[in-house]
Length: 333
Ligand code: TRP
Figure 1 (tube, rainbow, N blue to C red):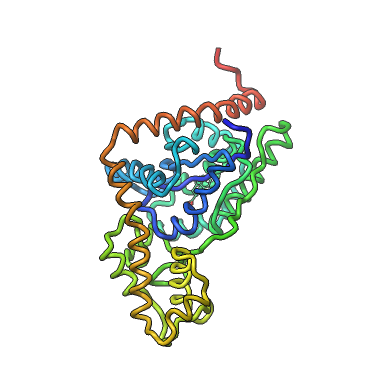
Figure 2 (cartoon, rainbow, N blue to C red):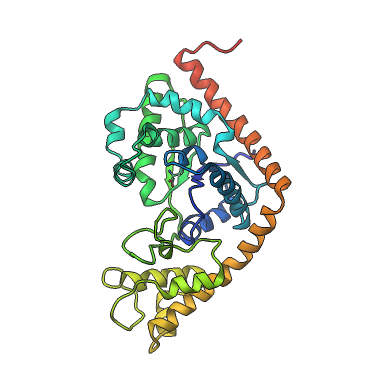
């Protein structure tokens, strides 16, 4: 690998990627591949904290890899791999579990939310989820982690665990920083624009999947919740629905809010929603075609996974061996 800073991030294969993942995250990852050593994992072990249908999980894992590539992540320039293929993640997670306090994990807002949502299955994995995430990041000595607001607390605990470990054993882990992209859209639900667009939302009208058909995309935008005014105007507090549609339209077309406001001056919400639906459908079309082509080429995807985990494995075992040695585990003869 070239001598560059390391970026690590992961996405769970727990549903199709949404327009929110694309405009809020992945689109910002594309230029990074020229400047950093980027490692992107499909974090299937994290997905197990919620009950999955095995055949679907398998399919979505491959599909997510195909989507990473279809969105423009070059598998030569980035390391793309499936988390469960590299056993170092689970191994380091166990060690770090022993350096993480119950009280710390109890404070995690995502745990509290998920425990409420999946009250019938509050498993120990859900509780220690942030420790596995810390292991993901620390194994690669990542300098930076691009994360959205909802993952900030998890990055904070990762830093705390790394510092705690380093205080006892010397400089073992790089303490990662959050990476905040210069431009980052925060895309909200189309049905409840105060909430982030999420692939695990029960109401599929609330999100655009990157794999939705063009007519479905147009229909979902048509149904998007707005307000009782008629003017296309950016005002997050009073017009969250319209503002969200404007930020989608702005991200996709590169137009400013003022330009959008004058473009739709005197036109109704109907025209605006249709225009947003159409540009989104047009933007996703080439991604969908590339995804389809990749999904039909199983050998190619297998090769990418194999190559990715070989490269990831080499880096992570360096860290893991060092950790084992520092804490006093006898090296395997
Ligand atoms: N918890 C992250 C999410 O749900 C996914 C994730 C797992 C991750 N491991 C990571 C993100 C490491 C960044 C770095 O979005």
